[in-house]
Image 1 (cartoon, rainbow, N blue to C red):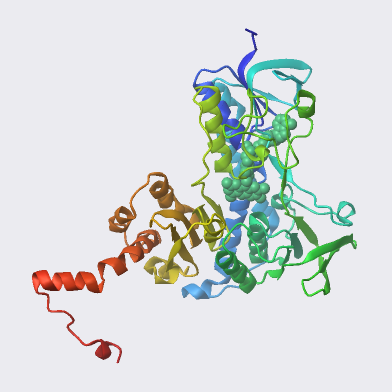
Image 2: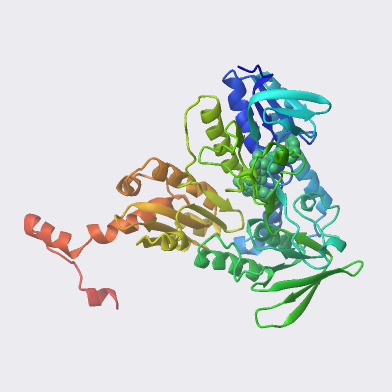
Length: 488
Ligand SMILES: Cc1cc2nc3c(=O)[nH]c(=O)nc-3n(C[C@H](O)[C@H](O)[C@H](O)COP(=O)(O)OP(=O)(O)OC[C@H]3O[C@@H](n4cnc5c(N)ncnc54)[C@H](O)[C@@H]3O)c2cc1C
């Protein structure tokens, strides 16, 4: 049996790679982690979730200050935003979390951490900084990067991506965002709230294309009402550098040509897998531009090489990468043949209101040919939402033909947090009646979860049939006032 230097080698120190490293090292596997940057944490910590949510919070506070009268407070004459201060806050939040993702922490857990850009020398070893490291099992977790779309002139026109947007040294006066996915949508609202004039262009007819149209359209309506200008169903024809301004020429659905001018262009049209430089071709690991091909156990075509996180082109979320890291540990270290199951993988787009989703939505249930029914509850019926001034949105609970919940969509305040209860209900196969009967604290926004489950049972419990039965058995006397009197 060959004698390898390590039991497991992990390439990429982001959410996926760190999960595998921590798990494997703590289970006693001799673990090597290789990261190409100087710090661990990956995109989520440095250019993704953490900076975006920190920026969104600053934008939200500024927006509340500008709208203080809505809360019965005096109006304020606010100075413009100094973006360097926001960047400073972003850097400080990243630095705090960085301690958790430090080389020292992983060293304490028992892993060896090396920085540099590795290349596979053969199926079991990499070359790194002039040395060779071999491992019985390898995990590729190198994440993804923003894709540069083939738009005429874009390569000659300065533009930014998620790598630069959080660290600008001043707030752009205007911005054209290419792409209406989660990143484009979140950033359009945040920058608009901070004072940038934002236009968003997408070739699709709606933003957030994976979501149900009614929910996505509601997000767009809110963003529009705040001032974001949308150019949907529009083809980007050319981008030009005009010096202090950039021009984006688009053709609308109606065939009109529109020239949008802005100080900054943000490109957020999708992500491509970070496969460059790994030498995957040389060892025959199969991949496309979307990602490395894996089976249900996240094994590549070489069964001892796994690919977890954004790199495999699946669900591109930090929690998905973490989940996949756990699957790899089960398969590679415990040798338990565990398959991935994304049935109840939740996600959330952190616009305000936020749009969270778990399980099937109407679109995916329809595509799967499932006969479903939708139960909804609006946030304007929730007492706490009204008190908070957050009454836009609704929750949709989707039941299959057996009246079992198969998915929930929430558009409203703290949608991501509200999903947590559904994570437990759906994964734990908790009965809807249990959720509907469980006491929730009042007044909370979370009561909406109980309420929507209750709306399913109400017509059954308060039916004529039940009334008739109770009348028969217990001689109940029926209505105390005539129906027509109530409507007067
Ligand atoms: C703006 C933005 C906002 C986001 N917001 C959210 C959110 O709110 N919630 C959410 O769940 N997800 C969010 N995401 C997605 C999330 O960041 C990714 O899904 C997550 O980071 C994927 O983890 P990963 O481990 O696969 O890759 P990464 O975290 O990107 O880690 C990959 C690591 O591999 C390293 N690497 C790359 N190539 C090599 C190489 N050749 N050799 C060695 N190391 C290499 C990289 O430097 C990096 O450290 C957001 C993304 C962006 C861009």
